[in-house]
Length: 139
Image (cartoon, rainbow, N blue to C red; front, side, top):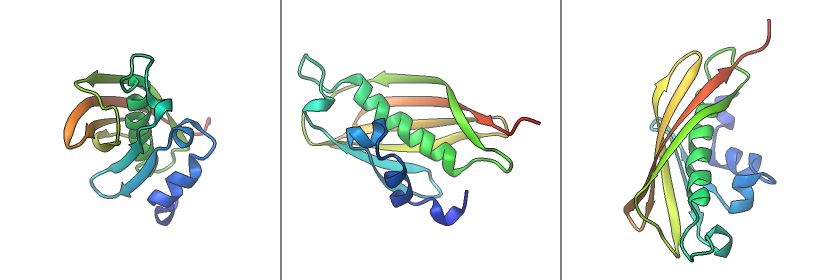
């Protein structure tokens, strides 16, 4: 992918009509550190118990890690797929927004591993790790 296309606007447009776009994920940075995004909390993000649904948090974190992987695909790769993810939820939020920063831990030829931290009001509410398998054309 052309490095000039790897901007927040590129990812925000690309996700329209998919889960991250429907939930309001907004990529705010694509840089040498990784990917950052935010998501405004609305009633659609809540669980029936009145707290932020874990799946909303996972959507934000997984999207950041996926976009990070897309931005760092090795030469010859045609894409990726998530093969494992893990999240630890340490807190919650009921209003405002949540933010995420994803950073690469391992950028290999066949796999990537990304870590993400999700915060609300400056407090860490989730830690996330995602492993992606790099896809290549069939020979």
